[in-house]
Length: 480
Ligand code: ADP
Image (cartoon, rainbow, N blue to C red; front, side, top):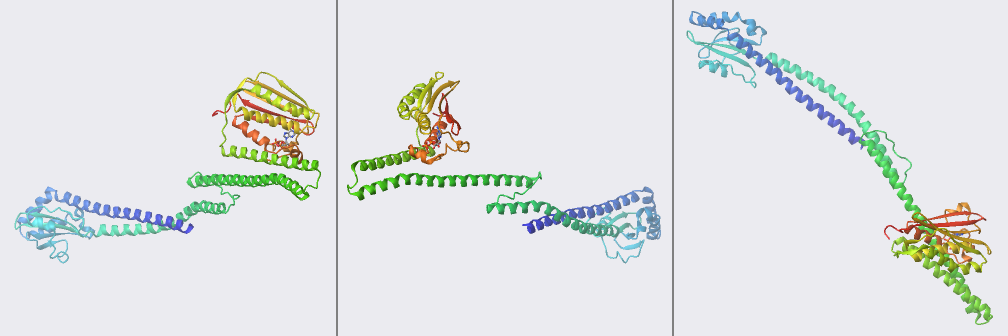
């Protein structure tokens, strides 16, 4: 790439310089020629428009030795006619165009009849100029006597020489220009190519997953913008890949968790069933009943796990329908309290309900909201040693209703608090499993609450107890 950009730039510069010089050269040479031609004709006009000269020439033409006399008269105008320059001469021709006299011998002009001489032979002033011819001339008829023609001829040597000099100067300038342009284009190419090659290297690294070397550019030009855009793109790509990796890791972990969670009940069901089938009625009926009880409990647990997983996967696929309706939040809280009272009493908990301010009606999926509150209370019952204190409080603040469940149970270690809403996350697996937990309750609760645009907050101190609160906007989900 470096090669080609270099050569392209050099080529562009060369073409530019060449065409510039060509145009300048042509114009210069042409205008020098034009200037000389114009000057020649102006000079001739000035001289021959002089009435005194015309009169002199006419009277000389009438006398003897007319050509010599006329030649003498014209010699007095050497300077004005520019004859002394050496490239210009005058001639006296007969009316038939024959050489009679002149400022030099006939050798150089013998046989030359120019269009201007032809005009003069026809009795007209010959002042025509033809820029393409190698000479310029003026021929004037003098009609007195035998009739003569005064002819001034310039071989254009002066202007040609000047033109040649100009061409040489331009060629020299071209050489210097080319040299400078090569140097300049190399410098320019380097300035352009360096950031581009940096970018290319960075792109190659990104292509193989190395995001650590970002090209730097503070330039405000297009390449600077390109570099910054590239960096943004690379960062986005990096974070997308990170997210993908994370979600892939989460997916794997989730699958591992599910397998593990299901394997435990399956293993115990299998071993109890095997024992029962191997014993062929040799174990006491009570033990048999116990074993069957375990099998039923474990099957129930599996059913619960599978149901919870189904619920979560429907949340993920957003295929779950929420039944939004107006209902009394206070009544739901009371219903849950009443439903859980027996269970709390079974564990000798002091279970109390306290409605602070009437929460009134809210809009939401009643069954699911109650499911969340049940989950809070059942956690409080599970994670509080028997004989604890569990307090349910509900109220309303502005457009938000809330319910909180507070226990004086085992609490949650600080570092685990943020994780308890994750799927299958349990602080104490054994304790959770013993009490029939699946580790999915709070993940489901947080999905439900977020569908209602609500929030769950949790405060806990290890060994002291936990308070978990759900706050819901009375309007429910905006799209519900
Ligand atoms: P589980 O079925 O295990 O109860 P949850 O999702 O409902 O699952 O809760 C996740 C974890 O959070 C529980 O395993 C437990 O470790 C912790 N936790 C929840 N509520 C409480 C609470 N009131 N007191 C102590 N720990 C709790």
